[in-house]
Length: 69
Image 1 (cartoon, one colour):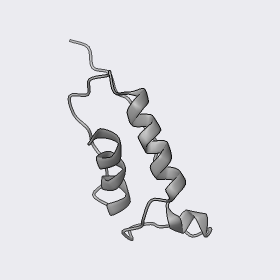
Image 2: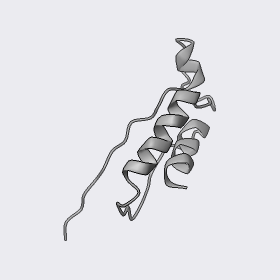
Image 3: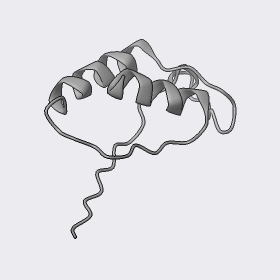
Image 4: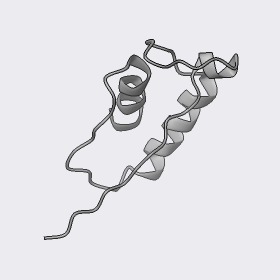
């Protein structure tokens, strides 16, 4: 049985745009990041992922919801 892991890095939060580190704060995705996530969703729409993992931070969950629905 073969396991394949695909890793996506997170996009820019509004804090990052202000040269601040979001860290463990909830954070909010920037408009550019939301656009990139929608584009990513289009690029991977024909791929099948059995499981998706992410941090429990708001910006990470929002990234997964935007990309994977």
